[in-house]
Amino acid sequence: MKEITFRSNMRKTGTGEVPAMHLNNAFRIIKEVQKKFKQFENEKKEMEDVIEQETLKITQTKGVPRLKDLYCRPNLSTRRVIGTLEAHSNGFRFHNTHGGNVDVIYSTIKHAFFQPCDKEMLIMLHFYLKHPIMIGKKKTYHICFYTEVGEIMTDLGKSSHMYDRDDIEAEHAEREMRQKLKGAFKNFIEKVESLSKGKVEFDTPFRELGFFGVPFRSSCMLQPTTHCLINVIEWPPFVIALDEVELVHFERVQFQLKNFDMVFIFKDYSRKIEMINSIPMSSLDAIKEWLNSCDLKYTEGAISLNWPKIMKTINDHPDSFFEDGGWKFLDPESEEEGEDEDSDAEGDASWGPG
Image (tube, helix red, strand yellow):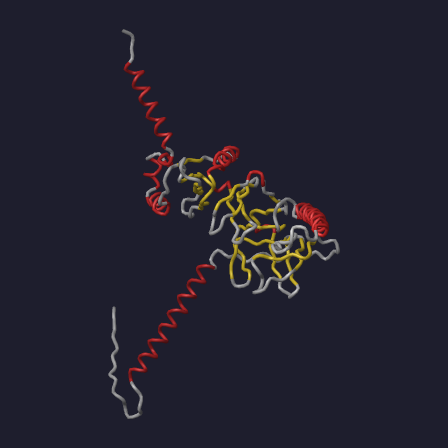
């Protein structure tokens, strides 16, 4: 049976009820059941890649490496609550003052980053995980522990001549606090790297190689590390592991434009490309130099491409893609060089002694 229809008239029965009301009620219940089933299926699909971590082995001795007065992102509850991060035998435990806690096992960490507070208002430890874990009712590949440094807000109404001495003392106190925090974080990192026996090694971004761009909705500074390109100050964070990238393509590279876009194509073609928009044109040469130092191939073009369509075509016909030269269509210079080589070869073949 493909389809069945139920009908009811609007005449009142002896009981005073309208038969059509029963059909409306049945229709509403069916819709609710369909909605709940669809929600259940979506949750089940979303949880497929979530794995259960091994049990944290708590270190009972008093000398457990510890960082106090930290916040966690994502939040463990609806409110931001201060807590303590501890390093145990096989993983971290963060517990806050409201009794909530989260464990991160060393073996689940793919990349660990230390974001110092140099020219930043936050200092943090950020973990990019191999598999997502559950924080509350949501899964996440990223978790960070941070504290704020100095004043994020500035009183614009204060006179430039008021409290100059207080401001100087406050700046001096802030510099001391930054040095103290950096020392505490570095000491914790050294203990963790020794305790984890090489399972966790922290990567620090090179701020001097950083450039501004828009990976999501707002502009932020992207900073290279030894193994990644990151921005972990903003949320959601942006992390690209360089060993997973096959090609970087620059779009909208034209002299009359002030900005260009940067596309990351991964070795796993089934994975969605990542893009950074609106990068200042003045950063192009420095980015190319950085990519060369990482042995990453890059191409550039004057127009924006339809990447979902391109990747779908490649995944549907991979053999044809490689037979046609792979990514050569992105690099017009390579085609021109090939044509020049062919013409030179034809000229050499036609030349002969008279």
